[in-house]
Length: 366
Image: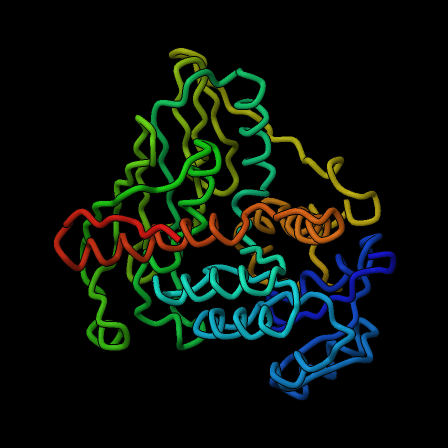
């Protein structure tokens, strides 16, 4: 493709974080935005100077000038919109999770294969500065042999949009699952998961999921490794945390317990707090600043990903760059559609196991 890739973004809450990244990326044109609310569509379009605007996702897909669609809409829409965009001949980037059922993950895989277009689940956790730093330690051999992996994502979702209420914790587990699998360079084979505690009846009735916390033990495919993941969404007292711990025979990494602390590195039994460097140098110069700043114009108007979670660890421009460059270079993105499905189905199957009292559930292969 000799010209710039024409990008469209659907969903302008969290999705607005990516508008100036695509506007400033050397290989993209921020061409169109889509939002159901006409007032928000106008406000965002005017603020960022984007003239092509759609209130309908279906109408937007009819625009033959659009090359790629970045989906940031509510979770229940991800599967159908991803499939529709792939069927319309668009490359697709979709925020997590890929879907909330194994069957919908399968349908997305089939749609991607049929279309030949790129699909990438935009998983922030494998592009944070913390992940990139530990990956560098792994690749250099400093970690040694990985022996065990642990992840957690605990967040109080009271007051968030209604589709979150009572959501099974493991249906939104990719932030905790993905860095473990990526660092182990493996996929999940099977899982046993237990639910713990109970949320309010008014929350349970929406999805039929009673647990306050779900904790899973995953066996990795063709590996001696296991990984543990804990997830909570409601009525569990805890500061927001998306974390991973990696234990290896030479060096180990533990995420900080409080947001204002630093993580710890252990060499043998000796541990120390470490400052994690930024990895903006891996990006085109024009988008490097977005690893440390949000896109809004005031502290009062920052998206929650910056006020809770430090902007997803500077991952946003890395995600956008990976998606764009996979198109430019005619290669699969990371994660590609199959990896995205495994990371998502790991959580879906974990919840199924929890509902069956910890019964082992095999992760489907696509």
